[in-house]
Length: 274
Image (cartoon, rainbow, N blue to C red):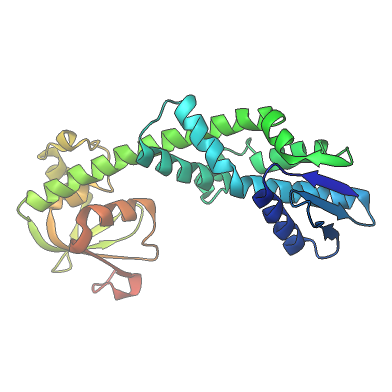
């Protein structure tokens, strides 16, 4: 049997309910008058320890992880703006949960959930376990790794800020520039294929000539860009884009820039022979 002691009755409540929810085969008890204590027992001691460690990990993530992330932001990275702290905290959680394959690739060495569970498991050797003592004094390795992930989240936040500024600049430019083409049709491909409204394709040579006569560098666009630059150079009043994935990164950016001027449709709706 393991007995867990919590400084706050609320944490004991949360642990009790989380444990019961995930471990119907194990016995969990709370005695009247001992609200900050929870007893767990079962036939297999190792199974009991592993289940307790999993629940302690879940409890920490739900109750304390955001606090530690924000504490790192304030004390180690000297952030004070509450909105920035909130946004970076959200990004950190997305990274830890690996909500995006990009995050999975970037932090494959950081398995913080496993690290956290291992730490709890290592300190379940006494009959009475002080949850808060483990949290306060035994999470050094976890905190070091969490600090690295928070640093990565800050980089992601700054990258997103730069991206939003870039998109806003292009959006304002497009909004204030007189349209050169009324309508263009675009096939989502690599490279993109551009067509006039009469069905004739705009060749790469034609596009090169138009790009050469346009100061793309003023907008921060590289000369070798073939995704966003053609749209800026053509400055259409309406864009019909045809393809299979409107969430593709470059397509998403173009839709952010042109907003109500662009309409995305399945490739089968393309009106001209390919």
